[in-house]
Amino acid sequence: MTTTQTTSPVKGGEFLIKDSDAADIFTPEDYTEEQLMFRKSMRDFLDKEVEPIKEKFDTVEGTTIAPGLLEQMGELGFHGIGVPEAYGGLGADFKTELAFGEIASDSFAFAQSIGVHTGLGIYPVLYYGTPEQQAKYLPDIIAAKIKCSYCLTEPGSGSDANAARTRAVLSADGSHYVLNGQKMWITNSGFADVFFVFCKIGDDQNLSCLIVHKEYGVKLGAEERKLGIHGSSTRQVFFEDVKVPVENLLGERDKGFKIAMNALNAGRIKIAVANSAIAKRAFGLGVRYANQRVQFGKPIAAFGAIQRKIANMAVRIYANDSAWNRAAHQVDQALEHMLAGGMPELEAKQRSVAEFALECAMTKVYGSEMEQLVVDEALQIHGGMGYSAESEVSTLYRNIRGNRIYEGTNEINRLLMPTTLLRKAMKGEVALMPAAMQAFQDLQGGKLNPATDNGEAFGLERAFLQCAKTVTILAAGQAMQRFQEAIKDEQEVLMELADMLTQVYLFESALLRAIKHGDKPSAPITAAMVLVLMHDSAEVLRRCSREVVYASAQGDMAAMTVKALTRLLGLPPHDLKETRRTIAAHFIARNGYEL
Picture 1 (cartoon, rainbow, N blue to C red):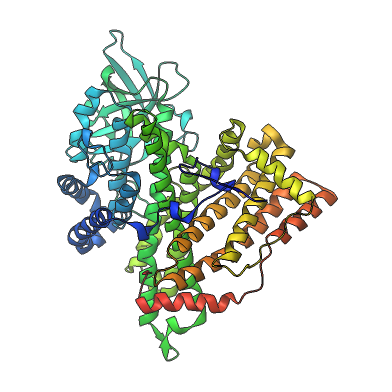
Picture 2: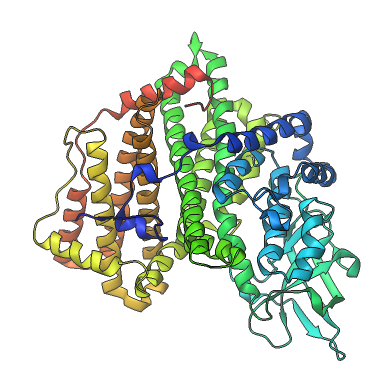
């Protein structure tokens, strides 16, 4: 099956059925002077204010330091990077905001305080607030004179957020709401001035959002004892007959779930950004230790077992970087298109991110699991020293575990990916069904063949990408034909499809990046990383497609389909050991992640 060429802006999910041009994507190599300046400014701030006291952010003392640092960042304008100038920000686009955010994420537990205050404090008011609310709150939130917390999770409602039991009742005179309930795992709660509280009003079936000031009578539990991020304030929050003025309703009544979900879309890709930052730090720790640690008369970096780890870590970091930068640019392209069509700016900013909800979820899942692997392998390279509580890599190991839980667990996000794509297909927004029908016809007609190298640059990789897309389309089509609307209850199948979609998007992103910058000195290494990633992706796609087909078909039909898809994902033999050694040697020589 041959996918069709597209012009910008591409829609969310269309990567599966349309080709993308390497010239149209955005990569870290494309950062502008302004973007590099923002990143350097944040790096300088962290080096001066956080690095000298980083150990304190592995203790509860960090929760008392964070408010002052947030205020310093506010004085420098850092919280308003992506806020339109009309609302007191710097007006940077989404990819610039994320490029800056990668550096900000390399700040241990303090990164949690930054992320919640900025991402979950500013944007709900910016997007859903009345002009009066925007004027009242935004300047002080951007300056961090008002510090924010976001209250969604409850003891009985985590992934099922709309099951929240916190409730508000309108007073008899209609002047205020009386709020009662409990929230838990609330970041920044120990020092927040304002809480965005999701609750149900009266007998409403859906959430609303109230802006609740601490002085209204909010009560706090003790700081939670967590596995990691000890320097991030996390408490339970209690509301006992708290009176909230009616003008503090954010957005429309009974439509707060939309506020929560839109915040999560942006939050998911921002987690992928943080994953890159932390993984690169851990990678550097691992490589430097491997260069320093001598065993059997030579640095352990000289041994193949360690080189394999280093290469696999580098490949996954490269893929993750490629994907979230690409997705951020796609959001910006969609925003420009919507603005050109006359859509109001704030509505366009919301919709442009929502359009790429699938891509945001994919980067979150891949990024957090990439990060887990990299940090774990970096600790393993340290051996017993890594297991010491005094090692920095052990702090990272404990801190990152929550990233597979925040912003929707990875399981929830995996269920979201294919259902989002299928929903868009049903609405006619993504032409998945015609593509699936064509793929089935090509399969039955014997027109599908595995990738071969045509001798051109990245010829094999380009051909494999087409095969990967075709296999994913066929698997999705097979599952839809078998289960139809009931597919929403086939969670195991949905999760396999999610991993297939993710592999396609991540591999394509890395491939397009390598093609675009094939003239740079790092080109041989990026080409090697794409080659390894291709073989890794083929293994994942073979396993996942087999699971989907066996769940969707039976007997000879299942066996024949699996055989055909496995053949389509076949690749010529290649000595990956030597390729990984080449990759590892590059990063070992540079003592860290440097292309």
